[in-house]
Amino acid sequence: MPIFTGISAGPAVRALVVGLLKRVAEVEARLTQTSRNSSKPPSSDPPTAPARAAKEPWGRKPGGQPGHPGEGRKLKPVEDVSRVIEVRPAGCGQCGTLLVGDDPCPERHQVTDLPRLEPLVTEYRRHTLACVSCGAMTQAAWPVGMPAGSFGPGRQATVGYLTGRVGMSQREVQEGLGGRYQTEVRVGSIAAVEQAVSRALAGPVAEAATYVQRQLGRNADETGWREQGKRV
Image (tube, rainbow, N blue to C red; front, side):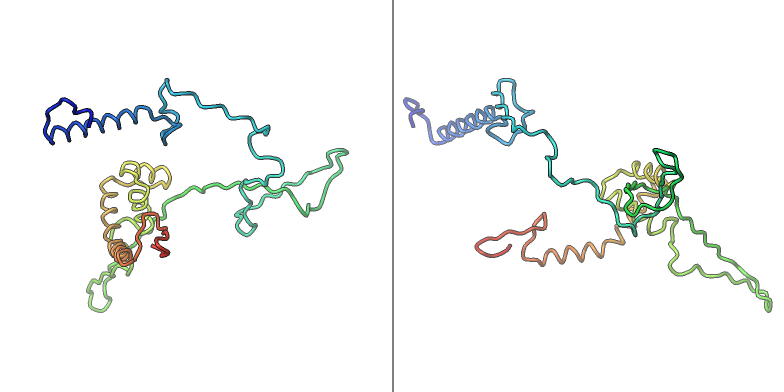
């Protein structure tokens, strides 16, 4: 190689120099990268980067063009509407005469809102009664299916979803349950619910993992592709 002309160096030194030259070339290539010759965003371009060429105007205004079907929110069917408020004019807008009847095709406008959520509190009362014959005291057994703790299945599922799926912290879950569901809960209780949900889901998760491991193709986004004519 010409770079080693007149230099007495062993193979190790030559390999080191070649590696350094390669690294220098890579660094220089990265320094010259802009949004025009790489996938870097325009905001990362240095001030010395050449300006992007202005796009030629198409002669059309921004937004939807005439004749283009709108993509607005579609109205829900009547059977899915919770409440209907009929709005009728009381009198003629020109002469004031009383108006009666119905418009067969009234203009419709729907407003979707979230109701105020309040906790559903169930109280179990276990009675102890005295026998009229022998006087012995007998206490009733708790009903089958009664949760052992203070949290019902819906509350546990909500905590598990917010912490496990949404990734909220225990403090954020505490604030969310109090502000949205009107439910007070301690951070320590949230941790206990997380453990209970994890134990409850251990079986289904293991079953899903076994199913995935048995498949021929395992892709992160659950999609496949063809390789040599076969779907993998």
